[in-house]
Amino acid sequence: GNSVTQMEGPVTLSEEAFLTINCTYTATGHPSLFWYVQYPGEGLQLLLKATKADDKGSNKGFEATYRKETTSFHLEKGSVQVSDSAVYFCALNYGGSQGNLIFGKGTKLSVKP
Amino acid sequence: DAGVTQSPTHLIKTRGQQVTLRCSPKSGHDTVSWYQQALGQGPQFIFQYYEEEERQRGNFPDRFSGHQYPNYSSELNVNALLLGDSALYLCASSFTWDYTFGSGTRLTVV
Image (cartoon, rainbow over all chains, first blue to last red; front, side, top):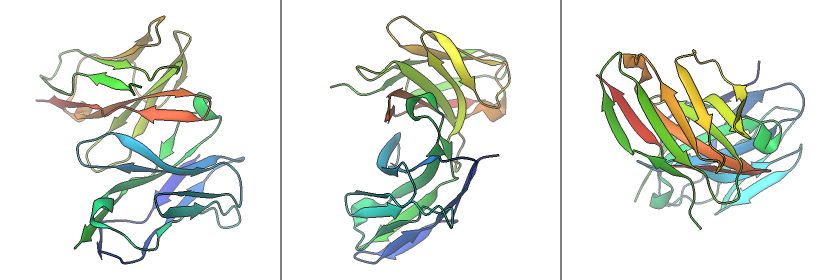
């Protein structure tokens, strides 16, 4: 079946360090891919998305490229800030609003000043 | 523009009881989905409502049921609560590719 696998956390970085959170997926067909962020005590916020192979999603300095050949959607940011500390979820979906999201287990990021 | 509103924010129930959680969707959204997020895990899809009908369902028992009203608001009902039902319950409303989550209801079963 369809599934998403994320790198285990927690990840601890110093401010201005480079961030990579790995995400791979197993799916039939052509899903859309997403990264969501969850700050403490809050719900999920969409960070970025890509709807087809080779698309790059980007937002707030974060980027991820939909790689069909490696079934991956790794999240990157060149210089993290303390305010980026949160839990990050990779997810896939078919069919837009008619589909349901399948999430990875999440990766907790802590950024130290 | 109000986003997705969930109530209550926190709830404590006893094993065997029943609970109802409520969700008001974002303005303009006609589809409501419910997710269960256990501590330290990713959200798991429970079911989705569209035009007052359950359109899709995840791998959850019949103790989990729902409803959608003509104004698109929705309820999640859980009967015969188990300790394992303790989780954050997230509601998401959507229209085409706009998928917006609420802040969730934290349910604790004791």
